[in-house]
Image 1: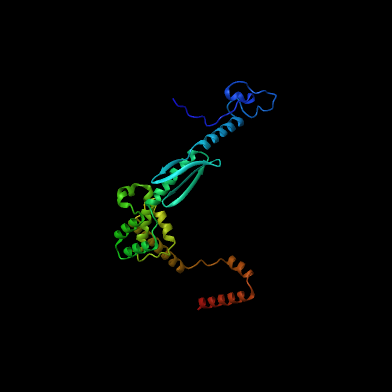
Image 2: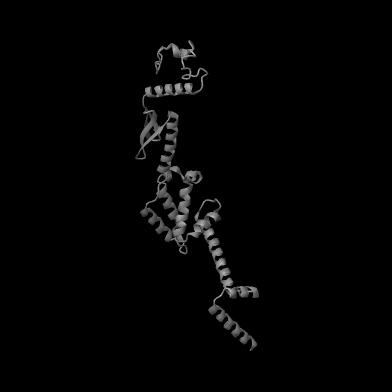
Length: 273
């Protein structure tokens, strides 16, 4: 029966033979701080770290698969490393131990998978979708936007995209983009409607129908405010009290007082007639 080689060879020293459970250190040599014989403390943790580093240095490189990508995992310069190419880009992650490296690779794989499934539309693709929406083909524009954003949409399936939170942002972006280009009475420079829409939706997924309902409510609110402002301009303002008139005249200059006097005199004369 073969036995695994001990990765670290420790020489025997009577002053440090407590590693083997015999010959405790002398208390008068001033070295009893190096190793804590209780199994904890700075000495014990330092020894543990030393042994882990020795084992890590003797561990040969290994290969870890992240989706379709391969990463070479190895120990060097007191750090664990993982190097590989995923989605056409070279990645190099480091960690204090293999567990940290593997955790980072899992998160990297999730991000790469998401980027592989969802892509940002380029300028030409956006123009294509906008033209379809402006021509009245709303459903076709939505389908084309999602086709550009999720190239593997047919493999993933519409049902999975609707229930997978990963695809929620792109579906909402498609809904608002197509709606905003299909409404000829909406201007992209309107900065207030997106804020109104967010409050109106209250967490509901943005769809073309929801955007339409929010736009109707937004215009109704704007028209109501305009009517109220118009009415307010025709409401007769309250006349100032005698005390307010006196306080105003005390701070006025001679020209203001003269104009006020003659305006008042003319008003009195008209009233007498």
